[in-house]
Image 1 (tube, one colour):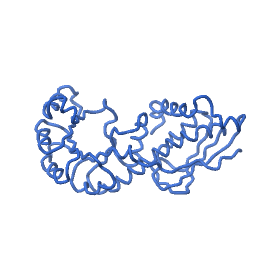
Image 2 (cartoon, helix red, strand yellow):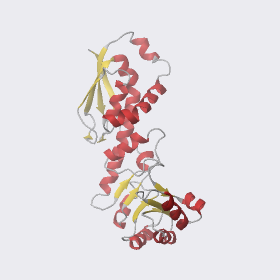
Image 3 (cartoon, helix red, strand yellow):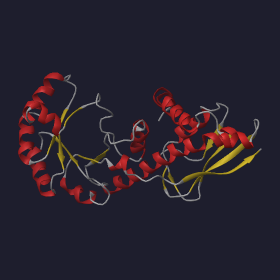
Image 4 (cartoon, one colour):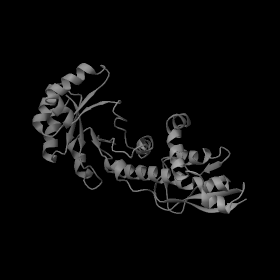
Length: 283
């Protein structure tokens, strides 16, 4: 995440998170630290994984005080191990204490997503299938969570409803069928937009292919039907497999030959990576 992108898109969200944690004052810190005191604290890794969100971690402190200094010993996407010192944060002790939880919440969450995503990516290694995330993100965390997926080696599906056309079951029901929904989408959308449609069986797949869908999502279909779908769609449309895709069952999907596998679990079920700020001391 480059600095311009973070400042334009993420600053307001980080400020909101800080406001959530400090509504009037940090009463504990103010009770024990009466005035400016220079200090530093170490960012320590307590679990092996992939780190993501270092810029966001830093920004949580520099929003509170732009004189805060952060020296990193790693970068986003690096493999980190238990016991590794990842950074030193130096500045007003009051800022270090008040910003600690928000900064860690972002970094732990994003690093957990990157770690889990990378695990799934390794299971797909050697196949043509690309791993995608979904819109099943934490409210107001999408920019951070989708960035973490990319750091982990995955790929982003559409960012939001304005970003692409995906006709799901309720859109199809509202339109009056697969073919009608695709026709309406193609008439409405700019010609540069691809049209993706969700199908639940091979009959719907055939209808979508005949109607000219660019991408077809195979939703919760059996392995046997997905194999047939790959044969039917060969050269006509790209295929995406979706529905309950987790580390436990992704291995069986590798040999099917779909172009994409999308998994909501990347963002809604990844455990955090255990990180902490330790050894705060004055200078």
